[in-house]
Length: 302
Length: 306
Image (tube, rainbow over all chains, first blue to last red; front, side, top):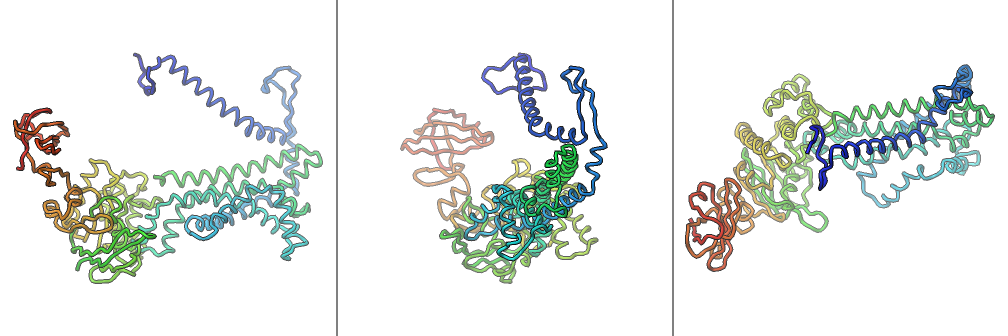
């Protein structure tokens, strides 16, 4: 039987012919690749492209009658894009979103690491119960969280903490929605960590603090970065809770609320333009964090 | 001064993993703790190293009672089973860790690390990361790291367990050589009797948390105190109702016994024989011996002691 050199023999009772094998490979490539790209296109790429297209005011002239978008005459309204993102209120909203999200994601990366540590390393009564608490922000609709926060930290606060219409209110809401990310990225790494590495450091004379600093923290950098990226993206995208606790005033309008307000005035292009900027920031931070995490991990992974 | 373990026990929950161990480990020698998995040998090592706290008993190293001393003050070099490398540090940083923790000057660390890497033949890998090393190299790095602090005692937990056969035997003879050069009191934990016989000057056979026998390897091999020690140190068979080593038997052509099977393992040949009495026994021959006898399966033979 003829076989080409670079093909591995198929595990099968009757060896397939070269042609059937080639056919199978083509079919599998087409189905796998096709399925993936179609799904990704519809679910992710299409909306992203549509957002950017709407943002720059792209409108097609389809009088040529061709089905292919490349044949159409495209008009764009780029100055409207510039106007929309150049508005001081837009910048204020975007900037507020970015620094609040950076702050919330940073705090939660540290706190998340500590929570993950306690959940993995300590044993105490009610641990399973506490553990299930961590995921509540995932489960709870954020608008519900907003309602709860307004009650708890609003003008009628039973604990006399009024964060309504203040950035601190937004901050608390963001802390809530982004908590699970760093906990859940760091936790599995802690579970898989070889305790003997810590023991080795100890037998070599390291103090508990030195073990933490030189051995434990470095191995958590990578998952912590990944968790940070996810938490940041989540914060930038948060709308439900912060639009409520922000109170709808200009000072506490974040990018997502700003976009919502634009849509309420039917300013679709402006909404899409600000969305494009927001998208850009989120994707940059997320891929940046993932890239750093991966490059940190690569040469060290066993 | 040796290492003395007195009445050492370790309980987890209700079961005793180590039960009342009394042992004196001679200075400067290589001692092997040999036993099957679950025999408590690694737990004994961990207690000497200060990683596990004994439930009862005392540990005295070179005259100093270290039972309540933290691992970091015990002055012990510990090589862990999976080598426990610091993955985010280069090989040189790994080896120098103990010194840098002690606040040794950078220049001195560099010099010491250089010497140690030469000793374990990793000089060309100083700037690599553990992930880029082979299993044998990782083990040598772990050894250099443990030796860097110039420990009084070196503890090795299954040092060759995760290596393939060729690297294993290579590393074994290298370790033997190293020990003869450095003469650091070394305790090695293994479940491999051949490894223990080859390396150890003193053999400690453990079973179910207790010490079964202590002695020179050949002494333990030839005069085992019980059937467990005997069968753990090498193959055994029955002859006239007595347990003996199959290499202490010979087969000669013609006789009342019948060869039922021959396993040819290369150098070693195992001949299964049913004796006239009905007793099943087997004989271990070397290839040249086997070729001389010219026997085949089904032949009538006679089995006797050498």
